[in-house]
Length: 176
Image (cartoon, rainbow, N blue to C red; front, side, top):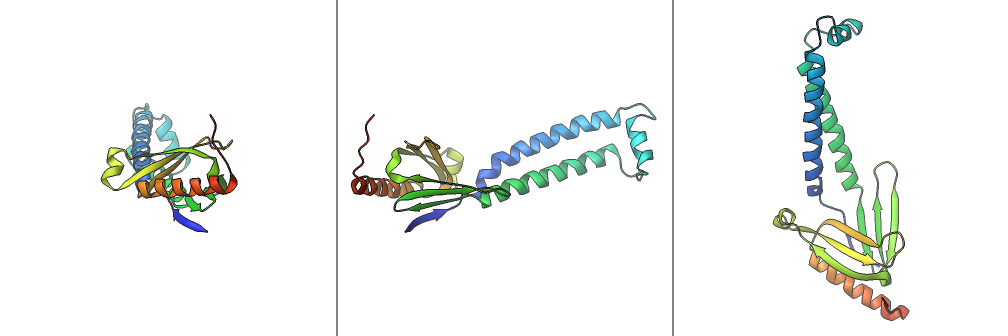
């Protein structure tokens, strides 16, 4: 029975956007220096002649076009990656699925959850988001993070109730 289902917020892409813009600016700077400061008849002149490109294609235009294309494609992938990530909590398991082109799915039996905590960094807390961090005895996910979701305290309490119920039903006790 599905008790909770969500996907991370697109706000999780803000650090990705900052990194992509930084890389695009660095790429533009390096490419512009390579193209603009070549001697006459150098790389840029050869490129224009060999492809019969318009004179209006200057090093600045080329740099900006390539940077905009890079930013667009990188952000499109980041948005799709978050969009195709989902978390589902049932009364027995936590299901996790992600992937744009190739899908990866996994599940964690709730009776394997040892401890849980919540993390609400300042900027995410301002918009009502946070992370739920699970410490488990699962081999593939000893630490699992439910990222960028609303109501982290509710989710943490829901997980606690489900974990306790599963442990009682299966007679599981935690030993360290």
